Image (cartoon, rainbow, N blue to C red; front, side, top):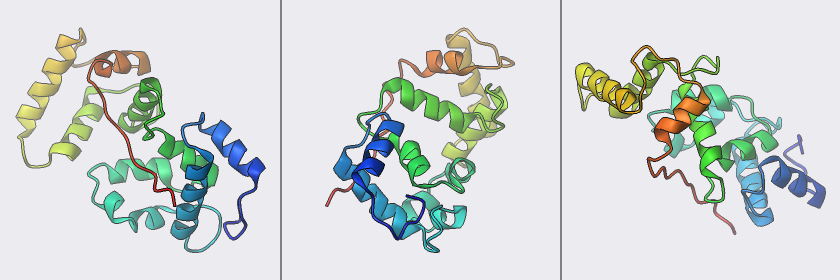
Length: 175
């Protein structure tokens, strides 16, 4: 599976399915493998940050730089596991855990006000002022029972986002 010039075996497909909690069908995994091989231009079995940035939809994503720290150097199995958070079959819990990882920029298992503010800044750009961003974020935290200086662990973070009707899906083209 590490060599992108080889084909996936039935065992490989089932192993990847298990690794991503069956969020993709076998046919979708084969399609993802074909896409992985296209992205892996040097054929080393891993996708680099530069190779990810060659995908126009990814390059223009306001969170692309944050996502790159999660993506750089992924093998195929890790690539599918990363994408599984975007599957319609992924549970809300899986989606929330993924989003928490995006927000937790230093990887310490806690999200700070400034980390949330950084994401909000990335998403809103120049459309709202820094003061407005801080006000909105402070209000959201206070409404959920947290202070501006709270360090949110994953359970706290999920509590805040839990009732947001979160939609995070991507279609996997199947030939």
